[in-house]
Length: 171
Ligand SMILES: CC(C)(COP(=O)(O)OP(=O)(O)OC[C@H]1O[C@@H](n2cnc3c(N)ncnc32)[C@H](O)[C@@H]1OP(=O)(O)O)[C@@H](O)C(=O)NCCC(=O)NCCS
Image (tube, rainbow, N blue to C red; front, side, top):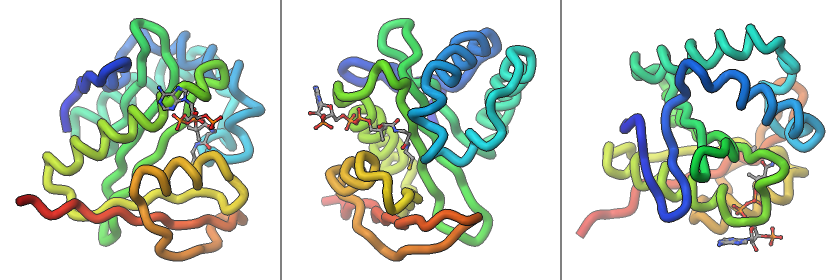
């Protein structure tokens, strides 16, 4: 996966040393908006130092090809995150969130489309997205992006729709 992907309005780039303060501020500001839907919020709020350490770890994981997490930037403003996770013996999954102040502008759709194009270029055969059944915004978004509802599962106390997208046929 490329470390940097540019779209019409956005840049997706792997998290870097130095992103900690912006990530901390985005998560703090967006806490109530993210907490119901994003599993990692169970471990938030972290301290600033722990957040700075975490972005260094994200960069390491990206370079090692373990988990690909991109900061999503509009200019130099952090507006969210997109991620792609390989899984042993399972279909890879994507994830995403937006800063609460940057919703409603089509940024999530634009970032995810770029991520899907990158996955297609890397010949990823299929992708899944796990979305809480009550998360209307995300279920609507992922359906608009061409995913199909595959199944519904119970996971760690949550009921999740599992959306599936297969790589389009070429030619
Ligand atoms: C899910 C989430 C990413 C969706 O964000 P979003 O901004 O609503 O999504 P989009 O990028 O698709 O934007 C669509 C909205 O932007 C509007 N929009 C404005 N300009 C636009 C443009 N140029 N292009 C497309 N849409 C545009 C659309 O009309 C739409 O608004 P509406 O929802 O009021 O109809 C966001 O709500 C979020 O971060 N939620 C919490 C975390 C979460 O649930 N993550 C997913 C876990 S599975």
